[in-house]
Image (cartoon, rainbow, N blue to C red):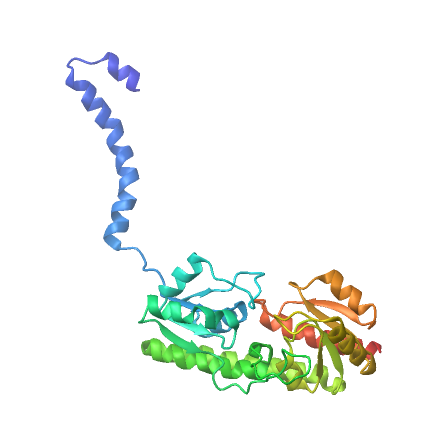
Length: 308
């Protein structure tokens, strides 16, 4: 059509008219959505909260729903004992409305002063505040005073952790208290159900021992009357003598399961387990699927107890 119209030109300005005839509708179709978007306004980004580990992210999201974006400092697969947050993670933290620490994790203590200096207005919360802490798990003789940081591996502890999160959210955002309260109560109900389910699964296993590479299940063992035998105190080099003592204890106590985390050397675990004869099971206590991990651990212990 443009070629035909060009032949019919009677005045040089007719070319301009032809161009506008076809170009204006195209420009309108491209610019109108942008103009309307500017007039109507774009939805504002959600405010941000930062937590330390993936299980915390899962827990906090059960309370805040779609009101906040929850970011996590610990990268997938990272070891919390030696973790060094990236610049991106630190910037996200400093731009957050609050940082909810797990409490007692080494990297948290390492960064907290820097965080406070860079953002003095950042709200800080220890979500394990009020939890009855276990000490001595990070040494073979059990005499250490260092608190075991794995508080989230107890469903009963998580009730307190969730309560701390809820109280923090009411302080940060009182206008949405009813919304948070409704979701918090629903989450507590699911935790009660999970606790009862695990207690029922493990009720025939009271007093049973299990082996774990790092002492990540101390609170889980306390809740359900189990004994945790540790092969390698977290963040500490193990000696041949220490491993030998743990292996001997595992044999005496007829431990039927050895749990090891994905950051441990599976070949080393298999080598040590050759002397114990337990079932080697990989677990991830730092998984976002916290609920699934707790159930997997309970069912594994119960299944091996029945097969014994």
